[in-house]
Image (cartoon, rainbow, N blue to C red):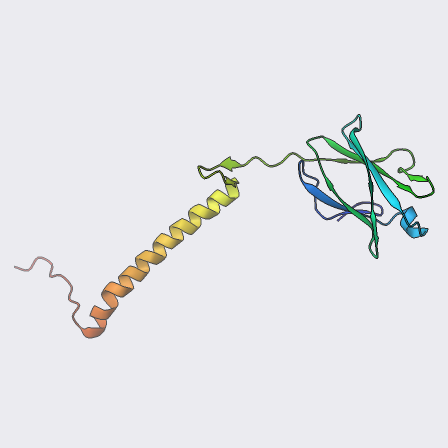
Length: 156
C-alpha cells in the first residue's frame, strides 16, 4: 500500500507494537544511491530515535521496523553523501493506530468479538450436523428394512 509518494508499507495501517516493512523508491533510489538509511522516531518529540541502514532491492530500499506504543511514526531518509530526503523539511509522519480490543478467554488466547460469533455459529452448526447424522444412522436402516412403524395414536 502506498501511503505517500514513493513510500510503501506492507500493511494497510500502522498498528502499535507490530512490525512493518517499509519500501522507499524516492529520490535516492531514482538517482542511484547505493547506501540509504532511514532515520526514525516516535511521537511529537521524536522519542527512541534510531538510524537503520536499508537494503537495496529491485523494488527500492527496504527495511523492517518494530513500531512502538506511540501516536505517530516519524522518519526521513539519508544517503551515503549526507543528503536528506525529509519531505521538504516536514519529515514523513504517519499515525499509529492502537491495537483492537480483544476478549480474553480462559486459555489465555485472545479472541475478538467477530471470532467469538463465528465460533458460536460453528458450534451451533456442528450440533445440528451431529443431530442429523444421529437421525440418519438410527432411522434410515429401519426405513430401508421396513421395520419402522409409527406409534399408533389413540387406538380404541
